Amino acid sequence: MKPVLRVFLIGAPLAVVAAVIFGSGGGSGVLADHPPSYPGQSSAPDPLASGDSKDNEELEDRIRAMPAGLADPGKKEIAGKLVASAENSTLDWRSQYGVIGDVGDGNGYTAGIIGFCSGTNDMLRLVESYTESHPDNPLAPYLPALREVDGTDSHQGLDPGFREAWAKAAEDQDFRDAQVATRDRLYFDPAVRLGKMDGLGTLGQFVYYDAMVLHGPGVDAQGFYGIRQAAMKKAKTAAEGGDEKAYLNAFMDESRSVIKLKFIKTQRDSSRIDTAQRVFLRDGNTNLDPPLVWQMYGDTFRIEE
Image (cartoon, rainbow, N blue to C red):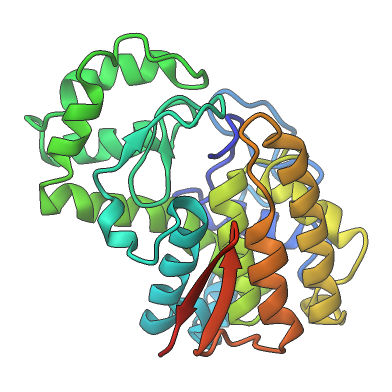
């Protein structure tokens, strides 16, 4: 589901995270013109790479002082259901641990609770992490193949047997926990963190999270950070003194355009924005309070409480 080109922020030095959050100016800023370097990606030196411990502490204090927002356990559960309705047409996201298949989007195998992909690095990270603590797991023999196909749609070295191995691994609660941890580390936590720094409420943080899952945290025009940068050229974030609703509409417009561009072959529509996120925003439900009613691909979903 996610694009091949991506940048992962969790696990990076806090100064790097701050650079991406604040860009080169104050307020929430824009994505830095020269994002930090990661393996396989070249860029100009990060202006905050030296790291100021006082600035880092102040940033952490600001984040800790903010309301839980989407990180509240109840809201996080709602987020899981909303994403599952878009990715798997169900509210039962926990039923998706063992699901695996190739949806024909050019990202190889898609599997698990948010659609970890063999071609977009997140599946590889998940299996590597799980194998560190469970070296004899059913997926461990496929690690060399996962490294080879990373960045492609190839199944070479994975077939036959990989789908069965994934389903077998998903019977283990530790692998399920590893999926949740990887989801949080790569997608949920950075999306909520950045949403808070941009002055967004619970709905806005979810919009960021959903876009992070769908588009991947890439800095290119079709990745999350590219979409955010384009939206910020059209509307100021709340942290910059702008109107939250106007900014979210601008962000959704950019995300919707990328959906239309990227998913022509798979005929994925923009329901997750048009008949879900915009409905909540139009109704003024920036806190994502139940009851919630939305449509996804023509089906109606409800969260009553």
